[in-house]
Image 1 (cartoon, one colour):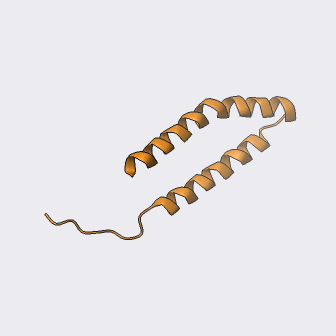
Image 2 (cartoon, helix red, strand yellow; image 1 turned 90 degrees about the vertical axis):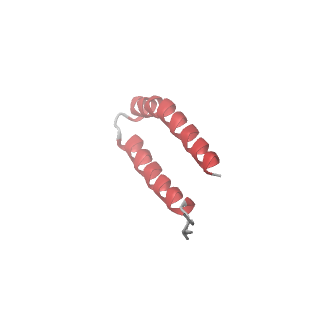
Length: 65
C-alpha cells in the first residue's frame, strides 16, 4: 500500500515539476502578470495538504517487540 501512495506522489511531483514552469510562462504571456499562476500554485498546495491529511492513518497499532 505504501509503495502505491509513494508512486502516485512521485508521479504527481514529476509532472508538476515538468509542466508548471511552462504553464506559468504561458499564462504570463497571455495575461501579463503572475497572479493566476501563483493562485493556481497556492490552491494546488492547499489541495495537496488536504489529500495528505485524508491519506494519513487514523489509528496507530503498537507493534510487539
